[in-house]
Length: 267
Ligand code: OAD
Image (tube, rainbow, N blue to C red; front, side, top):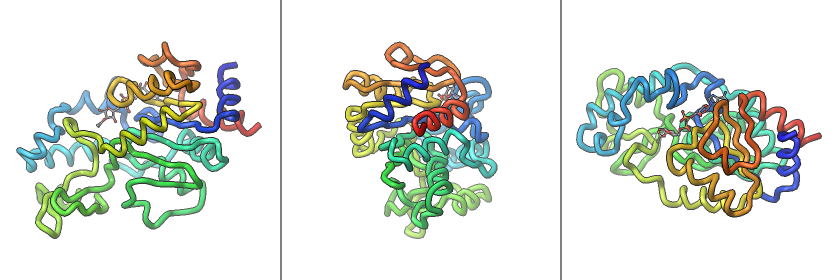
């Protein structure tokens, strides 16, 4: 069937790349953005623009604390979908995981499956686990970054201070902290987007997982991969705008499809 042919393509591929969105973390309990009860049902995107962060950092941070509560309240664990991708990486079948998610769960999966905690992992912006690159296109919401001196630090103590009324929270240097994520109206770092594009172009298999594929660069990366000759697969509970250009479409849960895919690749 389709999954078998996809597994075959992954086995033959020199470069297979996974591209993930909120749907891969949904089974871990992290809310998605779109759809019923999605984050953008409860909040307005306008509350979290870069322009607002600059002009009204106090209001921005008050709202951000609420968003942080809704999105990351609780100790989320990676699920079988994250783990199957980590396993594909570990066995040399996956060159890179590009993610739009800011929850850090791909790193946790790689750490927990293979080789224990990397002491640097909390603050590193790019990861390499057993040769698998993990590229977080939208940053990492567990960290903050000072807009003046550029220092990155663990977000938890800073979010706590903000929740207790220090808004906007400040770095020792006196600069304002910003969540270390890409805000609306803010460009993705040039090097990150370039790397994502070149991986999409290089890939022989491009696996788009749990993303609605409606915002950039999610909307164009699968097309770029397809036009460069990759086998494109879409795994999503619902149909997406990229289904028409995909070679394989699996309308199913990531925690079902990805472990089965891994087993087929290994068999
Ligand atoms: P979305 O919320 O737009 O899409 C999540 C997708 O996951 C939907 O298409 C669901 O059908 C699918 N899904 C949910 N649960 C699933 C499951 N168990 N198995 C398979 N599929 C499942 O999230 P993203 O596409 O990640 O940007 O959104 C992209 C960006 O838009 C986000 O990174 C965020 C948002 O605005 C920023 O914050 C900059």
